[in-house]
Length: 459
Ligand code: G2I
Image 1 (cartoon, rainbow, N blue to C red):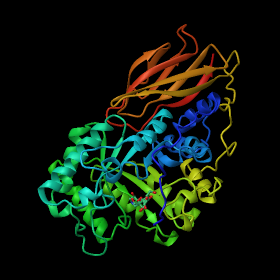
Image 2 (image 1 turned 60 degrees about the vertical axis):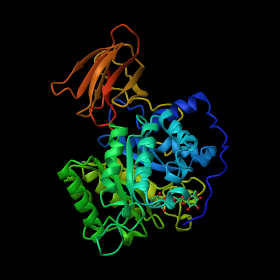
Image 3 (image 1 turned 180 degrees about the horizontal axis):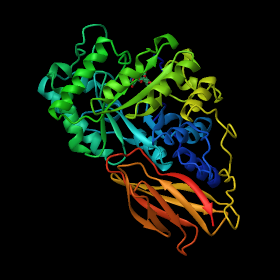
Image 4 (image 1 turned 180 degrees about the vertical axis):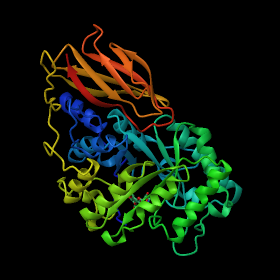
């Protein structure tokens, strides 16, 4: 484990780049690039994942690096989700009992949400990274302190964190299939469900995940034990929505050939599955491709998070396990993942995002002309979010946009909207209000999917 510091508590405020760069970053970070009238492969991890049924492609982020422009350039360009690497852990958020400290986590959340990225909260209850006061507690006092921590932190981030790792790493390694011994486990075997119940009460709209490592191989005792716990929770109505597989692989050979079976087996229990901390020693392109394809093959595998951006950002930087070199270059594994995300199509167009949105290959209906439609994400609430679309190139445009069920558009403005019979495809024409229209989408429980422009035609 590397011994890196997150730095002092006085990190410089993030300096906003020039407006145009920020605006372009916004479009790409949210996974909603301007799409041409004909389909084209997206050119960033987040946009490409979003195009695959609204999946996310995230990264662990360290607050201390938000002042490193080389770091934020990649973060803002490539990813549409973030996980604070250490800043939401118990020792960071409650260093003294009942004294909460959110500045570093808030900084990451603000950065991410300002760019339309979603946040995975990590983690509310864990045997590790406990502050000294908690390490020294036991029994009902510890149980109460743990539940208070879950409640306070989940309440602070209510509406901002899409998914919580409520409990992290609660099972033992090896063949026992037992719970890991810890002070929390010794408060009673029901500590995990108590934590989930408290988290649900504090933030009813957040998706609640159980997260662990060495749960990738379907036949491993630890995987089976976590599976049985999730099955039990579902059977008894304990609130759980997702399972995180950390997936810290120590080389291509440690990626198990039955990984897809693991993903689909958990999904079959009625929970979403996330790959939450992916890194692979020496970043073999083939293993990264397999992990990506396995996630894409399972509808409830909603996204992948890599545990850091550049190799130098990794907790095991000596193993070069990530998608970007220490100097920020794209590694072979990056291209392989992007290719897999793009339906197997190699990335097309520029390898770095253009500074202006891509233009539409002209569609030539009668009368000629062409148009481009581009999405700008708007305000996000717990249950809904706004989207604005701007059309350029024509004043007589028709834009079609797909919405992922069960999401549903509830409010529209500045356009004439019609819907397909299933309500999933909108067709929008100008209504005299100009070339920018907007709408509000109710998430109906799916907080990850985002609207996709499928065409812009002129008439
Ligand atoms: O250990 C890898 C990951 C396993 N799953 C849970 C994750 O939360 C965990 O992340 C790592 C971070 O990547 C490390 O950055 O968790 C470690 C322990 O919390 C983090 O390491 C700690 C060091 O132990 C501290 O010495 C250091 O002050 O990071 C701290 C901040 O850099």
